Amino acid sequence: MKFTRLLIIKLVLLAPFFSNPLGAAPDKLFIDLVNYSASIDGYSSLCVQNYDDDQELNSLFALLRELKDKYLLFTDDDYDMLKSTYMKTKSATITQLMKLKLNVQKSSCSNYLKIFERFDRKKQKSLEDLERMINAY
Image (cartoon, rainbow, N blue to C red):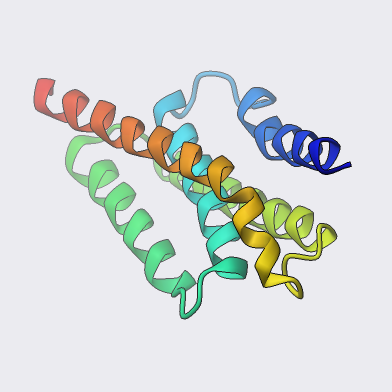
């Protein structure tokens, strides 16, 4: 039963990464960064005490706004789409975690920590790739 739950949550959380209808714009790197961040923030908002959702959201989109303005790596429409993608992914993550009752059974959060640690490693890799892209710019 536990394995099935874990498999289901993995599939639900990974679905946005593999079903992006947007095609090529904006760059997949930005979409991945936003999706990983949103999933991590959704988990953290339920499982991490004193987690500041607004600070994380503002930090991510301040970075994206700077990249948009300074390097012209994507358009205003792309920026808005990334923000929308973030909100949808975070909302879907929270909804799925609430179905698993993590909002009332905080002790169960540790059962899903490894998933979100992997997302964090992938997010860090996306940030490193982004840094390489900017350095090459």
